[in-house]
Length: 128
Image (tube, rainbow, N blue to C red; front, side):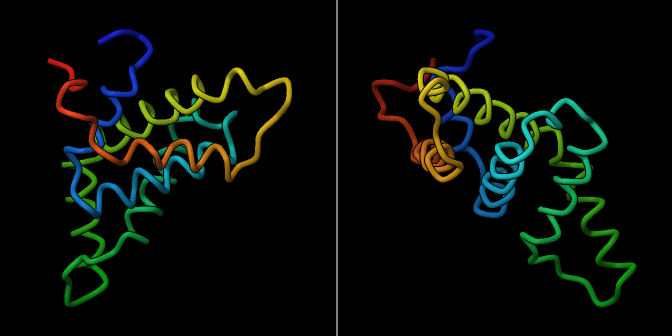
């Protein structure tokens, strides 16, 4: 893959996620757009993905410790993939919005651009 992801590559990466994963990646995009200077802070990113995983919910557990274990297990398995997809999407949105940096754009416009990638690419544009 290039250092800059293509729109089709981002769409394909997102198309491989399940609904919970998509919620988390969408949430990560929102927090990264709001705090772009903190994206390189690994601890902050870990806190954000943990928080968003808890918000995405649907963890079957009978007690508090069981819920913590369920979230920890989920993140142990999925965090790398979720962060990768979140960063791909954030970078792509940054590239898309770059021509508008002089005139400016809103949080909502950046989010709308990001959410447009949640549709899979046409078959003819999928990376091989």
